[in-house]
Structures are given as C-alpha cells and as structure tokens.
Length: 409
Image 1 (cartoon, rainbow, N blue to C red):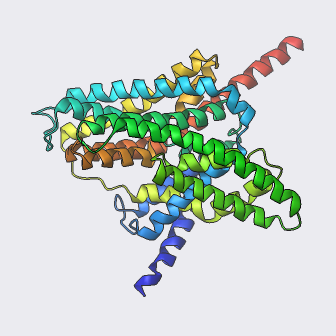
Image 2 (cartoon, rainbow, N blue to C red):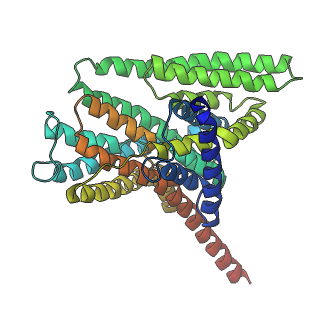
C-alpha cells in the first residue's frame, strides 16, 4: 500500500494549496503566498505530514518548467527588445549590490567567537560566497504573481523577466569563478564558452523549429491539440539541453522555448492549454515543494541575529540595486520599486547555489540554517511586496485622476 501514498500526498497538496490560496486572496495577498505556506505547514518545518519525495521533486521540476514556458509564450518580444538594455543594467546592479551586502554582513558575523566555521576554506572566500548566494533570483514566484495581477506583459514585467534571465547567467559565471578557487576541476573558460554556445544553439534551433512549427500548423489545422504536444516536446528538449549540455538553468531553456513560439499564430491556444495543466496540477506542487524543502536546525542567539539581518539585507539590496538600475533606465519611481520587488525572491535557486558551495567546502554547515530562512522569507515576502508596489502605483494614478477631475469640474 506504501506505493500508493503519492496519491494521498497529491490530494493533500492540491487541497491545502487551494484553501490557503483562497484565504490569501481574501487578505488581499497573491494566492501563491498561500501555496507556499501550505508546503511550509505540511513539511518538516511545522507539522511534518509530508516530505519531499522523488515523485514530488520530479513533478515540481516539470511545474516550474511549464510555468516559465507559459511566461515565454505570453511575453511580448518587441517589448523585450525595448527593455533589453534596461534588463542588463538592472541585472548587473541586482547582482553587484546583494554581493556587496551579503559579503559585508558575513564579514561581521562569520568569524571565531561569533559563528564558528567548520570548513577549512579561508573566511574571505566563505564571506564572498555568502554574497554570491544573495545574488540569486527565483523569478518563478514573480511570474506567477504578475500573471495573477495581469502585469506579466507590461514594461515592468518584461524588464523583470529579462533581468532575471541575465541574472541567472551572471550568477553561473560568478559561482563558477568562486567555486574554481576551491575545486580545481572547474574551468571558468569552458563555462563561459558553454554559455555562449547555448545562446547560439537557441538562436539556430529556435529559428528552425519556428519555421517548421509554422509550416506544420498551416498544413494540419483540423486538430490543434497536436500543436500543444509538439510545443511541449520542444519546451522539454530545450530545458534538457540547457541544463545537461550547456550548464544553464533548465527554466532558462523553457522560457526561451516559449519566447520562440510567442509570435506563432496559435500561441494563445497553446498558452490556454498549458495554463490549465499548470493550474490544476503542476503549479501547486511546485510551490508547495519549496515549503517541503525547509528544515530549520537549532540555532544560537548569534545565528538568529545573523539570520534576521541577512533576510533584511537580502530584501533591501535587491530592491535598492535593481531599483536603481531601473531608475537609471528612465523607469518612474513606482516602476523602479516594482522592478526591485520583483527580483527579491531567492527560492530554490539560492538553495542550489548554497548546496554547490557546501559540496566544495565554501560554506559552513552553521550558515545553512540562515540561508534556508532567507529563502523562505524572501519567497513569501516577494509576492506580497510586489502586490503592494503595484497597488500603490494604481492608488497614486487614481488620486491624480481624481484631482484632475476636481480641477476641471
């Protein structure tokens, strides 16, 4: 009977994410917050009813791939081109400022007498690596929140998406450089060449697939369902190739696959089918799985203080860094804050980076607890901040509109 436990796990996840999602909405918060809380409550951190299994892990991976694929399908390429330069500047400042902030707070706490390190790597490299962890961005939470608010295809939404993709690439480069100091098998030049090769590969394969897809859809128009299957195959193959062959995150490959098909005649039809699949099954499992990963170890007073300050630094440096970048690119103050809030979430990306560092001796086990707290806090706070940032923008527009009406009355 143990082999059928996954059915009960699925039922609990789907029910709890939906119930808490509805409650979140009633409190004027994005429903994704409820889904994240559901995983946290069901997981080892609180009630320990569910644990992450291989089945849930695999489904959650498919969930985030589909989420980013639909984000690509819904993106406006012309708008992305306009925000290309802006996304680069936002991403660079969104990496540099958190890196400095993370290093600074680690320098103050990660030393003998405060937090004892249990790895032999120099404290300087350990502190830099903590800064590297804070540079991570998990845009999947932001994508779901923007979709819920109908803001995904706006200039702000496109700037966030573009910056997050560039952020991912910069993160890989920085992670490779810092891990190469502790792991001689890592070659920075090879990694950079693979990243470059990935974008060349995406351009060539994307062009060929788009032309093929267009031709097939013109010939076979009676059964449009086959187009959905073909699009999904392309998405999965792009995700696989990006992660396994080129070492770029699978969600980047999935997003680019969606972007390639976004100008297709049948993109809206394909999007609706994937949104149904995502809503019914995959998204709830993905967001709940983030909470299921969380296990909070016993911590001293020094580590608790460090954790709180690290969370504050993690939030403020992304808002400030990305916000300044957006402001330099002629976004308004409100839009700059929205962009900054959209880049706050660290999610599973920070956990992956932290795990990599721990495996090569760049991070003490004492620091892993605070990193988990940062992941949980930023993941829950990000959609709330984003909602408030857009609401405040709408309120100020409404006030200006009311004032204009009074003046003309």
